[in-house]
Structures are given as C-alpha cells and as structure tokens.
Length: 386
Image (cartoon, rainbow, N blue to C red; front, side):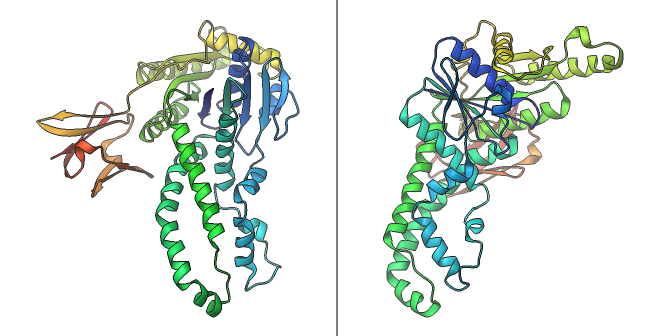
C-alpha cells in the first residue's frame, strides 16, 4: 500500500490536486482512498459528493472520507478519559466542562494521523491519498509523534514508580484519585501507536509527501521552508506541484503585469528544486469541482507519469569525512546560517532552525565524539566532530 500526502500553504489548491491525483490513479485500476485531515473539510465539496467519517464509494475504485477529529479523539482516549474526568471533577464537582478540558491543543489532529496508521494496517486499498491541513499545522503534526512519544517514554516509567510508592498517601492527603496500572497501560499503548506512526511516516518505500505551491513569491518561499523542515524530520518529498498557473493566452490587458511575476516565480521553483520532479497545472476553464473536472486536471497534471509511483528519493542524512574529521551532513536548504543553531548533549544532537527544534541520536561512528564546528554550505549543514 502507498501513502501520498499533499501539503502546502492555505489556498494553493491542495484539496483539488489531491482529489485530481486520486481520480488519475483510480482511473488506472488501483483501489484508492482519499481522506482529509483538515478540520475545515472541503474534500466533499471538491468531488461534489456528501462524505462522512466512513469511506464512501464515489466512483469506480475511488473511495473518500473526511476524518472526524472529535470522534477519533474519543477513540484514542480509551480509559484515560474516565480517569481525567475524575481528576478534574474531584475538587470542583461535575459542573466543570470536562469534555472541553480533555482536548489538548493539536490532539484532535494527532488522532487524525493515527487514523492513517489504522487504514494502512487494514491494507484494504492500493493507495491512501491524504489532503493535509495547511503547512504550519501539518508540520506540527508530523513532528508530534516523535516529540510526544519521546516525552511519554521518559515520563511514564518514573510516574508509574512514584504512584506505587507515594500514591496512597497523596490520594488520602490531597483527596485526588491516583491513576491505576491500567491507566499507565493505556498511555503505553498510545505510545506504541505513536512509535508505529512515526516509523510508517518515515518509510520512504511507502510514504511520499508532495508540496503544492503557486507561482507567487510569498507562496514559493513558504514551499521552500516547508521542504527544508520536512527534510529536517527525514520525510521523503518526492515532487513539487505548481498549481494555478495563468495560461499565456490570459496574460494580457489587466493581467499583463503578472507575466513577469509568474516567469520569475516559475524560474525560482525550477532552480530551487533541481532534481525533484516538478508538475505544473494551469487554470482550467471550469472550476476544479466534480469528478469529471478532477479527472481532466489529473491527466493534465501528470500526463504520462504514474503518480502512484515514488517519484524521487533523496538522501537527507550522511556521515562523511571533512578536513580529516568525521562530519554529520544534513540536507536542509533555503535557510540563512544565522537561523541555525547546533548543540550536543552526550550522544544526542540538537538542531534548531528558527522556531523548529529536532533531536537526533548520533550514529555509532560519532558517539563519544564532540562537535568542533559547523559549516552551512550549498544548503547542507555540515557538523564536524572530533
């Protein structure tokens, strides 16, 4: 089974491109499911079909659904919800709005991602296409499994031991319920799910991420940042989709000034993403809505290329020699070196890019060595060890 995620800035047409791709692949005979993880769903509007939180057949070989984040959140909580409810109402009574307090920021979106893992494990479809939320939310989600999972793995053993030792005394003194072993078991099950999700999303033989952009300078800049951050988390971006291109025949009169702007943006995209397949979709005469229009768009976008395939696979990390020293090299283009910071804690390496932070466990070859310097050359961060 293949999984293809479409992401990009809000308004670039991710939903339309994802739906057009789904139509193209389904037309080739593959069984396709397309889902939307964006809480502001528009997938049903795009394919002109009423969708629910269960897969609905909309055409031959094509199924679609809009994930209900609240419902998935309920399923993910399991017995944790009842314990949290007791904890929150133990001192304040039942009047507190527990249902609202039990939703962590981003948790609904995270459980939507867990749904991807569930669909993959069932293996009913040949390909799953995911219409993701706008860039910022998608990046937050893709790093959530690693960060949340790391937090759980360190915290739970300590907390379980503390509850066994001091729990009864605390419960009696503070008059708040202590979690039972079954609650920790639930958290550890969630932890296992997160680890499985992170492993799946990082499997480059299965998962591809495609960035949708438009030929506008602001949008192209965000696409570059998106690409760099995805590389930082070792996700495989296998194509760039340039949507909403003005046909040359329309660039006259009022739109004449767009000619140069579009040319410059298209050239920037071509030069910036050298090596990556780039696909272009012009504005069509009709709105990109209904399966018939989406099928036409899919044919125009990919022509003779099969979008089911992995279109590119780059090497993001490498260990090499530099000036007789071992060097950890990370491919993260499109940043100013002033935005980068690196530090080491034992055998853990931390890289900070603006407001994004990533932790790496050093490869065996670099363990027990210290950072002596770093150089940012041609979009690659070279961290030197000795």
